[in-house]
Structures are given as structure tokens and as C-alpha cells.
Image (cartoon, rainbow, N blue to C red; front, side):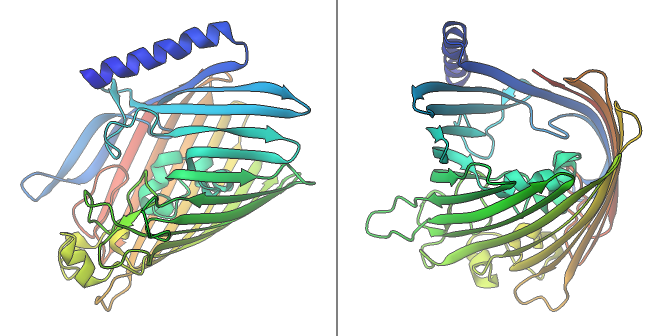
Length: 390
């Protein structure tokens, strides 16, 4: 209750500021769909079909505030605050980062002819180059097949500083550094990233590298990726490289068709059987514990297309394939998802969509499209929804 009242008070304050300052913009997305999934894990250990109303099928529902103040000489002060919410329940979407109002973004900085410098909680450049991948069209529908692990879905880094260059004849570069904020141990919880993209007419190219190091936060001893922080935590491995992610993406517009392909490698050197057992994950000899987040290395491949049948109607297709290695497990785990969809825009701000997916896992706990299938077999999913942007 207190958290809800605080959220309303903050949002009300910004709404008043927006009326008083023309440089402040309120924006948002409400995305909700009816979803069917087969073979969802049940509480009794089996599987069953599931129907649900889900928020954020393609894009997470959110409300945001952004603005700029002209400081003269081409220099501006800028800020961006963005809160996520679950439209199906009305709850604040902070399940992964408790009591975090502006979970999605919280930055302030300076912008000018030199580029932009931002400080706060923000995504690295993988989020920017995701415009060349299935994330542009399918969003979260393809998250569990690999793009959630390789940061293309937009994983945030706390306590970070970033610099993005101005557009230089189609090229834009980015540097990021995340402070671990541990006294006497600069490398504990540290993170850094470097990336760039090139846009030239129908061609888009992007590359990004991100690395995080183990921290010492006592409240979380998990070695698995913690969305919303730049830290992996393990007292015995403080300062050691925990996650290394490389993304390479390309997109080309052939008339009405956009075709794209991308590759990502994720290495998580601290995901050893001993460390995972100590963190409470359990033995990797048990299939249910073999999630992509627990892998030591994952190679993720994707090809896809978006075809504009009319200016309002798009046909979508993507194939994602992931191969993962686990410590002490001889067989390479495999996961494949085939996604199909159609997106019809009723206006520039409102669209209707229908999505299908089929996932197949081998020697891996199938993460499912939205809910785990609970087996290493297959799962089918269908979603029909509406998205409105304001």
C-alpha cells in the first residue's frame, strides 16, 4: 500500500511538472494479450495447458517521463524516468528488483554536438542494436529462446555512466561503465560495455560487448544473471569475470521486406557445478536445473524477416537456435524456437497482433514462450493482443 501511494505521489508530481514545462513529455505503452500455452509446468510436477491474460507480450507496459533544458551553446540537460507495470493486474512491475519504482530507466545527463553522457540506471548498447533483431517485431515473445540471456531484450545496469557519440556519417558508438561500489575492491560488481552501429539506407549493422564481474552483495548469493543489476554475487569469486556477452547483428530492407540475422555468445565462467550447488541451484545432472541462465557458455543464432503486405499489415517470422554447455554435462543442450506473427496497425499508435511459437528443447529445461514447459520436449503457444502507445 505504501509503495502504491508513493508511486501515485511521484507520478502526480511529474504530471504537474509536465503542465508547467513544455520540455517535459509523458509517454507510455500498454500491451496486453490473451495467451495460450501447452505443456506448462504444474504445481504437482506435471504439465497442462494454460490460458492467461498477459501484460507486455511484445513490449513491457510502461509509463515514462523525459525532458530537456536548453543550456545554451548547443548544450542541453536531459533526463528520462521510466516505470514498468503489469496491465493485467495494475501492479508495479518490480518483481525482479523489489521496491524499484523506475525499474526500466532512471538517468540524467548532458547532450550536445559531442554526443550524450548519462548517469544512473540504464541499458547497455545491446538494447539499441536489438532494432536489427526479432526484438523489434516480436519483443518479449522471443526472450526465452535466447535474447533474454544475451541482453538484446534490454538488461539494465545500476550505478552506471554511459557515453554515446553523435551520429557520424551513419556510425554511432557507445561506452558504458558500471560501478560496483564496494570499498577497497574496485573490480567487485564492476561492469563495462562497448558497442557501435552503422546505418546506411536499407543497411543496419551492430556490435556490442558487455562484461560483468562478481560482487559481494550478501542478500543474493546467486551466480545467475540478475536482471536489474550489474553484479553477480559470490564471496569466493569477488572481482572475477562472471558474464561476457558478444552480440553481432545485421539487417537489410529489400523493398517491403526486412531481413535480419544475428549471433551472440554468452560466457558465464563462474557457473561451475560447485558454485551453482552452493548457490542453491542444484545438480546439473538433473534436467530441470539446466536452464540457459545456468549455462557456462551459450551460442545463440537467429534469422528472421518482417514483410509489409500493406502499409498497415506486417507479416513476421523468426527462427532462434541456441546451443548451451553446462559444467560436467557431456551433451550440448539445444533449444529452437520458430515464431510467426501478424501485426495490423489501426493507427500510428494502436495495433492488433497475433503470434504463434513452437519451442523444442533437448537436454535442457524448456523455458517455454512465457511459462516453462517443465520438460525437455516441445511447447506450442499462441497470443492475440492489442498494444497502444501514447
